[in-house]
Length: 231
Ligand SMILES: [Zn+2]
Ligand SMILES: [Zn+2]
Image 1 (cartoon, rainbow, N blue to C red):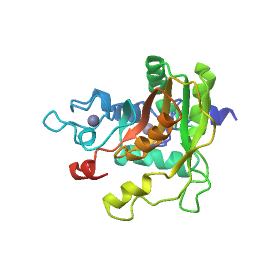
Image 2 (tube, rainbow, N blue to C red; image 1 turned 180 degrees about the vertical axis):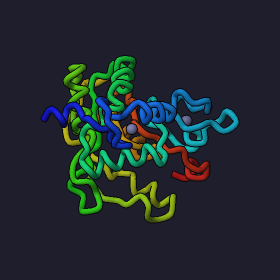
Image 3 (spheres, rainbow, N blue to C red; image 1 turned 45 degrees about the vertical axis):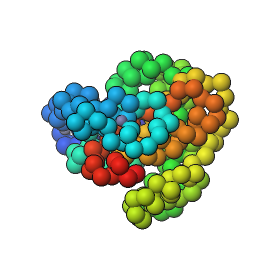
Image 4 (cartoon, protein in one colour; image 1 turned 120 degrees about the vertical axis):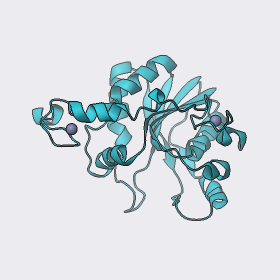
């Protein structure tokens, strides 16, 4: 139990370390912070701007009010994420916890929720990686938290043409709880590529009467311009 709570080895390089990541890996990890990079990003959806214009925002209606992502999704962070998701390495979240709590302090949401992805066949992860993280946030902040959104239709995003994918996302999520009288809702995601999924979830949340929907993603992948227009 003690070993689990205080790992003796860096989860990435296996070197002896009291922290989840050793100092060297932590230094490396910090460089992936999207907020410290020089790239100009959209204040609303966080995608990189192209000649001061946001292709994502200008090609659709956005239901969420604000999106922020913490770290770049690349080969290093991807391996961390895979370790977290598929090896059930439940201490990984501690790497991001401090940064997440900082944002929650700024936002002051009334409720925090996430999309549950369990029970969707062999190709999906069999447990919710965000569960431990969200429980920890609740314990620290006292803000009500829950597994509020579930996938009601399994869709594989990698299949189909891009405009078909958009329709796949539409109406494929539902709420697991009755949410009312909430002004500020914070949705936590582990990874965002286009933001089309969270936009659809935000639409459902707004339909429930929630006034403000904020999205916090741990990782974000910067994708091709073309995908921003089409998804
Ligand atoms: Zn290390
Ligand atoms: Zn934008």
